[in-house]
Amino acid sequence: MTSERIDTLVVGAGQAGVAASEHLGRNGVPHLVLERARIAERWRTERWDSLVANGPAWHDRFPGMEFGGFGGDDFVPKEAVADYFVAYAEKIGAPVRCGVEVREVRRLDGRPGFRVETSEGVIEATNVIAATGAFQRPIIPQLVPETPGLTQIHSTGYSNPDQLDDGGVLVVGAGSSGVQIADELLRAGKRVYLSVGPHDRPPRSYRGRDFVWWLGVLGKWDAAAMAPGLEHVTIAVSGASGGHTVDFRRLAHDGMTLVGRTEACRDGVLTFAGDLAENIARGDANLRALLDEADAYVARNGLDLPEEPEARATLPDPDCLTHPLRELDLKAAGVSTIIWATGFAADYGWLKVDTFGPDGKPRHQRGVSAEPGIYFLGLPWQSRRGSSFIWGVWHDARYVADHIATQRVYRDYAPDTAR
Image (cartoon, rainbow, N blue to C red; front, side, top):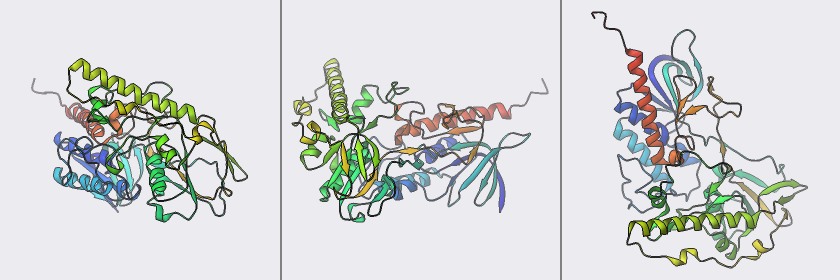
């Protein structure tokens, strides 16, 4: 067991940890990055096989390096995304130690800094950056009891259609993960039910520009906080098959059964809320609102972008939307698998410091926590809408690293005794 001291310890070597290392290095801050597995491990082992980045390569990257072997408008496969971060860490000389788990962080008594217990010994650090993000502990609602013949997995445990048993599949959650997995299963010939909750549904592209470009020029990536009441609204968008606008009506016409939010289960029978039509209408309204803003932007700036009236076309409502299913007997319907695409919870049980609110969420301002010397990176809406995206976390990391560098100046100040 070893013992050492470092100015700043970064916990996690995903996109947030690598970004932190780059900016700390630029500021001359001695630091160390610990990763319990491999760099960008979650991209490799906690995502399904066919996953690609949800944004095009020109956008979803760090400023200092492009994706090799891909065009700017390509949607990069997950393994290549992980390889990108490995290469980026090598490029900047990030001091990453893999295979080291951080077990506990506590403030030192009577002197500045923190005692960090790891699987390979104790490290003392003046600052600790929790770069593990908010997507740590998969959430599976305790609705459906363990049942013989029924497999329940979180979306992080899904790899491909071949791993599933014969029979139908219920996918709960229609954000990006849920809708992409459901679409893949449908294309593989599975009988698929998709539980659809409130969501935003932007166009994949419009008038020759990807939606990430529209969010940029319209200033939406820079929104400082989510509007009240929208905290749990997911975004249904896909880069699969070259990228396309998610269309729930199209999925239903292709054979998928849409249902409302999954509410309860009793004696093997699931019940769904009567909100399917409302949720679909809300997604439609979100899409139309963005199209309206985009058209206004084009007119205001005199841009020569081709009109695209077909983007507003709507397929007829399928039967599952006009006559929504409110109950589903899983056994009778032949459903053998439930995939819970229901998101994640933060897990900071290892961080034994006074910086969490009653809800367990970090108390911070742009990643600078209420506990001096503790910082966070990779949180949704950490500073703005784009914070949890690849390019957004890079900018948040710069702010955190600059704050640490500034504090080092104050800490190292000594009066001029000769004056």
